[in-house]
Every structure is written in structure tokens, then in C-alpha cells.
Length: 409
Image 1 (cartoon, rainbow, N blue to C red):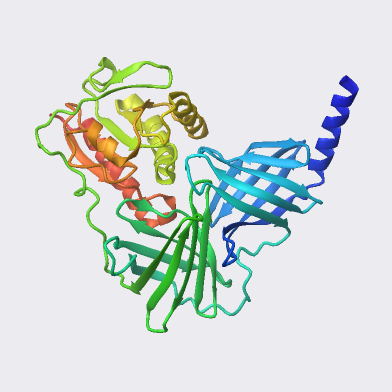
Image 2: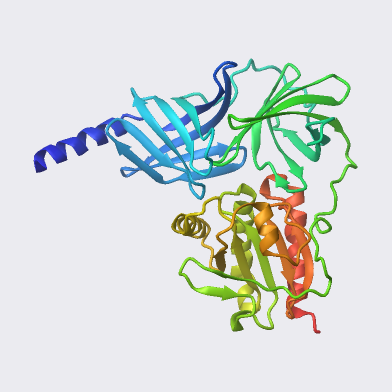
């Protein structure tokens, strides 16, 4: 029996070792009838028998290290998010299988295939780029409908290539790292980070007007339009969520992953400025904010700053929620408290924090002074994909933190 087990392991490892290293091109089949595919690139590396998959989105690199072999199958689980790939190894340069999003109850399985050696994200003819899409665009999603919403599109061409990178800023967050190409007046952009599965296809009319389609996963599609407008701005993110009563006291109590009850009124937080992060481990913008706040906490905690995360997970299973939070904290070395509310969705978040007018986005971040009076409530988060907007946010935030720490009452 032991000999058979060893032989089985050797065969499995041999099957895995046949996988070629280097850049692969993967696709998610969003619509089989239209043969609509969302492409992304990833890299397979082998370091002393330990395999890792690195997903590429513009400047972002997502290292996937939960990789395993079962018979002739390659299975890898995305970091932070509760999603995974289950694939069959075909030869040494092909994969075929599915991507499963465990946070969704419906339309949570999408067909996946991949081929080694093709570095092109989109398979379109390469022509001389026009750089037409460079710049800032006033964007409207679902125009002329009740669901219409505004955004800012920011795109740039990579010099001497047809590659285009960029993102959309909205009032509830950004669309993270988008990458694609321009060809014959058309724009193709995509992003896959384990949660977001975004595909944008658009074209211009030659008069600085863009019309396009946006697909998210296999179940969402909407139109969008854009016009060049360097002066366009979204509503003030510090004016969207506010206290119903300016003199209201902020209070809450929830349990952490160790089943310890934590309250804002605990001795640990008295006479200290506190940042309250309303978030969820399933939320890509929350992931970006958590990575940033983890660094902020290490820099300012010894000076007196505290941070408390309030997690609104997409599960009613408390043990699953704990597992999700522990994966997040491990990934970004988070050492501040993240409390598990046991609630899901923006409506429940609003109900559990009745001193706020609403919670319209994850994340929403509340900055308290040493007396736990609200000094700012920020809706959404401008992540690193937004470039200058991210730099402006971090600069303003750290100025506020220093003011809360050192301003005398």
C-alpha cells in the first residue's frame, strides 16, 4: 500500500512538473452564445518544487500560493477572496476548467481555459496606437436610466506600445487595475483579481465621445458613455455619509476572531484617536484599503492611533466569516482589530450603526478624535490604481492622523 501511495504521488508530481513556466493567457467565458471572453495574463513559477501563480493586471501582481495537484488537476485558491480555480492539465501548456466564486449563490461558476506562451492579453491585430484614449473622461454608466451613475475614467497608453492601462473612479470606490489595448479606434480593457472579473469594450466617434459595454462576471452588463473633461469631479466623498446628529456618541460592540467582545469604550481606546473601517473581506477596494491601513497602523500605533475594522461578510456562517478575516489579516499582516459583525450588506451595516444617515459603500471610513468625536467620514477608497488620486488621499489622511494625534484639545 505504501509503495502504491508513493507511486501515485510521483505520478501526480510528474504531471504537474510538465506544466511550462512563464507567461500564460487565461480566459473566462462570460457568454457562450456570444463567445464573449474576459482575458488576463498570469505567470507560473517553480522554485525548488514549490509552485506559485502570479496574476498580472497592469502594474499589479497577485501572488497565488495556495496551489495543489490532485491526479491530473491543478487547483488554486485566490488569496483573500473566497474563490478558486479547478482545472485539468492538458499536455504541458494547457489548462481547462472552471472558476468558482463561493461568495455568490447564483451564476458563481464560469468556464476557464489557459494556454502558455501568449503574452498578448487581447487577441486583436496590432496597429500603430493613436493615444486617443489618454486622459481624463467624464463617464456615465447606464446612461438615461434610473440606475445611471457617474465616474471618472483615467487612461494612459504605454509608450511605444498599443497597451492601455487605467481605471474608473466612482463615488463608492475604483475599478482597480485595468489593462488592455487600443486597436482601430476600439478600446479593450479587463481586470481579474479573484473577485472583480471586469471586461470593457468601447469605441470612439472621432469627436472625443466614447460609447461602450461593461461586463462583470457572467451576469452583469451595462452600457457606458464618456466625454473628455479634465475639470469633471465626483461629489465630495466626505459629504455622502454623515452623522444624523452632530453631537451623537459613537458606540458599538462586536466579537473578534478569538471570540473576544470588543467595544469602542474599552480602556484600550480611551483618549486615543480611532479609525473605524467599515469593510468586508470580499470587497476589492476594502482589500486595497486594508493593505494601506496595515502600514498606517504600524507607523502610528506607538504614537497613539488605533484602528478597528467592522467586517460585514457575505456569509451567515460565523466560522466561515472568521476564516475569511484570518486570511485577510495574514495576507496583509494586519495587527489592528477586525470585528465580525455577523451581518451582511449595506442595509444591515446602516442598521447596526444607527448614528449614520446611511452606509452607501464598502469601505466607509470614520475618523474619530481622542474624545471619539467624528472629524471625517470618507465614503469609498481611491486605491493605488488611481495614481494621483491615491497619492492625494494618503497625503490628506496622514495629515489628518497627525492632526488628531498632536492637536491639543
